[in-house]
Length: 382
Image (cartoon, rainbow, N blue to C red; front, side, top):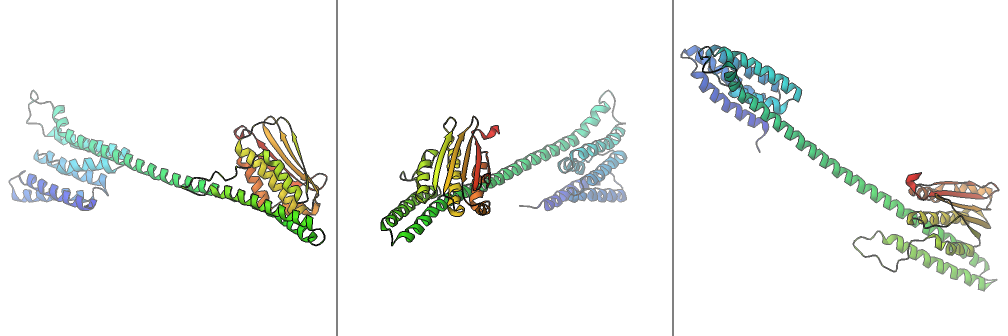
């Protein structure tokens, strides 16, 4: 592809040849002829710089054309045509209008002056001047049209590029959110079940020699807990697979209907848990129900790991516009600081925020530790 500046040079050369030929016939005097040819060629060669200095090139070409018209009654607008086109195509719109109007006025005066040989009844001055200026106006309009078209195409390309970047950013954000969700699920499943397994393994070791029956029950609990954890991990990690049909054997997402199973598992680990449900139960969105279940699970897991508690109360309170989830234990106050940070509390806050809710965690009023979450049924109505 020819570079723009090389193309401008070739165009300027062609215009210079045509202008030189026209200028050579303007007079029979050799010195004047040489001057006019040199002036025409020099003017045409300024077109090489038309993209860099469109207004200056227009002024030079219009001045030379006006000189030829005024002095020699000739009209050679070759370079001026290109200059008018170039002005509209490569200058700001306001500058192109002002400079173009000034150029037309500068040519209209000498063109009207050159009409002394024309009879008024044959040609009107206005028609004659308009006819001479019409090609220049057409060239300006063509340049303005092409400039507008180029600007529109650039805007379309920029918009397409922006949309592509936004799509890539949305895809990355969606992937990050999915990874964070899976990480929360894996943490909740692994942390809870491993806490139960650790408690049961410690109990089995303590009574292994003195009470084999209790040791066997603890080992059986360890086995069932591990199998349950494996099933939940298969469900969580199954969503990562692409291009494969998910197995119907994967267990469903846990719901509040499975809370008693969760609490039984915690009870076997040695923590007495009481479940209280107040208010009128209602069908909940799946995301909210899963968040409520995981918050109770994580709160009880923290109780098992840190609190040295013997009793806990899990409360579900159905209000008119939200579900309140509260877990209170009777653990030692000194353990409260161990539960105010870490992945567990962060995960609970993220789960509450994901459904438009909020969570509080800290020492309870009568000792122990309290986790309270409020999960609105309609996040947009908060």
